[in-house]
Length: 183
Image 1 (cartoon, rainbow, N blue to C red):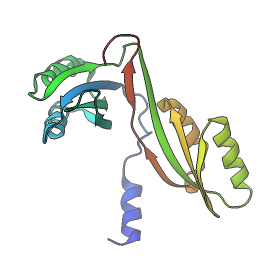
Image 2: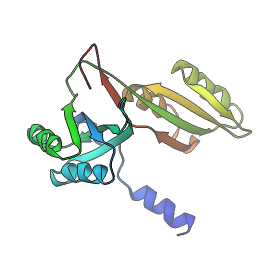
Image 3: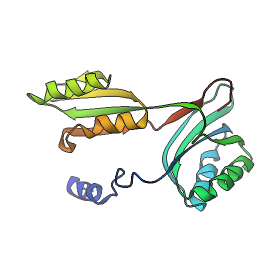
C-alpha cells in the first residue's frame, strides 16, 4: 500500500475525541498467564457490544498471573452482567469495575513533535507546563514523555497543532485501588 492510500485511510477513520459524552468504564482483571486468555476476555466485550478503548496487560505480583486493565465504553445497563461473565471465565481469578471506586490511575504518552525554528520554544514551554520530559532532541523534532490522568494528556495534546504531531503513542490507563482494597 503506498503512502497516499495510507493517509487517505487514516483521514477516514473515526475521530477518537468526537464523542466525549460516552461513559468510560475501567475494569481490572487478575488472570492466569496462559495462551488464549486475552482472546476469551476480548470476546466477552465484543459479544456485549462494548468497545475496548485501551488495554494494558502486565505481569502481576504473583508469578504465573497477569493484570489486565481495560478501559471500555458501552451500555452501562449490562456492565454488571458482563463483569460476572468475565469472572466466570476459567482463567480469570477476579474481575472488578473500578469506575466509581477510590483509585489512583495514570497513563503515559510519547509525543513526537515537529518543531523547527520558533515553534521549538513554544513546544518546550507546553512541555514544561505539563511536567513532560524531553526524551529525545533532533534537529527538526523532539519526543516528549508525559504521564498523568487521561484528561491531562488530552489537554496537552490539544495544545499542539495537528500538523506538528508526527507520532503519538499512549499506554492506556492503569489503575490501582487505594488503601488495602485489592485491585
